[in-house]
Image (cartoon, rainbow, N blue to C red):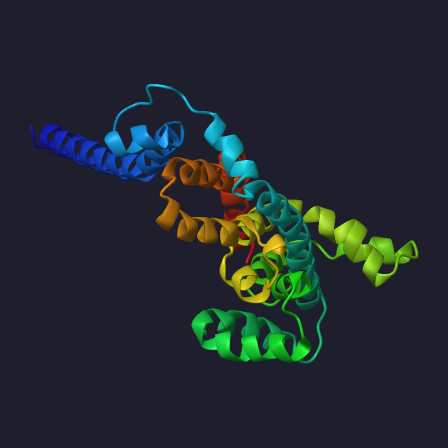
Length: 281
């Protein structure tokens, strides 16, 4: 009897926890669904009832957001900045991670310690020196944004360090015996062996750079160079006066859709990559 009561209690507790998680998931998904529904209404219909389904599906709101609101230009700015920024950030993290993990030299532990300490320093505390540095170097342009994404000592380095630490050095020794140099061993031997970590870090970098608002907002002076995050913020300000919210919702969906698709298809690689890196570390 006691065992039956215990099993029933565990089942009830598990059911309650599952219902709570389902409710939490719905609370996260519902705003996106609401935004999608209202992006397909006319502006007049939106103000009449923000909760109803569209009587007439206005797909032209997306065309208006793409062209009239310049979301198309901002979208492609974000695409090339995200591509270049992801490549530079991952490579600038992989190189020090590989050196610290596989080569013994004075100060190697200090480099790794600095990467750890970086997590303890609030980002807001670095804004002042960072702004003055960019100003003195004249980097209020896309190049400055790209350099900002190239910081190698940080989260990405720690993850990749764990992967490189778990790779046998025998692969490199065999390549050295065949006449390969250090850079060639890193690029063609060791880097492919940690592709799980590279993929995970790339996904993380893509999401972070695509959604980044602060650096492009501060460093990009020309409106034609704005990323989609900055462009959306400007569009929100414009819609305060024109109140064409359905076009704004369409623009938001254009901005969020690539990240949603990428995460839906690659979430397993992201989670498994970080988990493997943590276990190897």
